[in-house]
Image 1 (cartoon, one colour):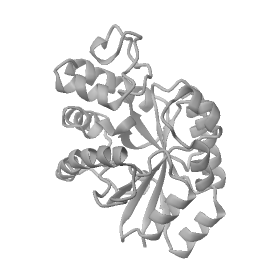
Image 2 (cartoon, one colour):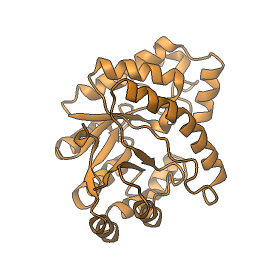
Image 3 (spheres, helix red, strand yellow):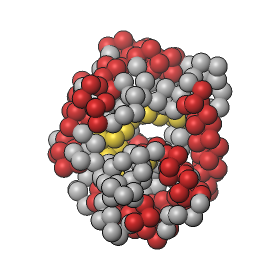
Length: 282
């Protein structure tokens, strides 16, 4: 039997995302989510999570997206811009880290603070992943390994979507980003295995990132090989509201609609797929 983790990223980034996570778990196929320590709606997200003990909660490490660090900007000056916020884009972070502008002690302290903040909330933490998947970059990955050991965590996302998935139909820019990410992720997967960490066999959500609507989700479910799969999703209740704040082009409501779709649930049942969260993995 195939096993499937439907994970909602960015839990805690906004009330409309928190509400979508609650709806997706209560009435849909959502079983897992990833919590942003630096999210403006973090306290509400913790409350939502505590009311739903069957919802798997991961740590969504963050170093980009224009969000605030957990530590003060004065403590991590190499990680923030003139606003005291993380850089807006993945590309800006990559430029900084590969030109030696980021101090690794600050990087360690900030990620440690994010993990400690979430671990101290009284939640059962099932896994680790990150905003824009920066945890698999070699310079960040070595720190994440150390922090996972420190906090006794051993399950994580490895976002190595196949190079060949939607090779000719995906957005070219997104496909290029996916391929670079998969390159780093495959090395991280080998390391993770050697360290005794646990991860799903397959990851989906880069080619369709921000647009995991019912059609795209149905396509993935219909062709999954045998194993444990994770589908990354970004549900939200009001795309118009969220898009005014986060200029990422995400189709938040469409993703929530896919999660609560009776047709998707029926397809999962017909294919005898078990819905799980990371905590159900060994």
